[in-house]
Structure formats: C-alpha cells, structure tokens
Image (cartoon, rainbow, N blue to C red; front, side, top):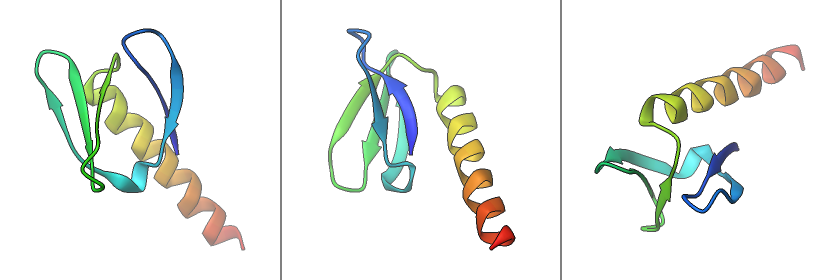
Length: 65
C-alpha cells in the first residue's frame, strides 16, 4: 500500500499490487487492474519510488519470518 494525493490535496492509500500502469497527461494518472483511474499530484517517478520502497518492506519482512 502506498500513499498518494488527489489534486484537491486529499491523501489516500492505493494498493500498489493493483497498479497496471501510470501515465503523465500532463497530470499523473494511475490505472488499476480493476479498470479504475486515479489522478494524483505525485509524479510517475515518485509513485515508482514508493512502490519500490513498499515492495522492499514486504520482501524484508518475509525474509525475516
């Protein structure tokens, strides 16, 4: 799960596992595997970094168990 911000400054959480692709149009649009699209303030690069950090946390937790 990653935090993102809508254009109205509302912060919410997205399941990173559901992200299918990210577009810059010029706003950033996250398309989910469910078909839903979300417009956010973050750049695609910021979202990618958050997903990487999320995956690293999950991987490290699994390794420790």
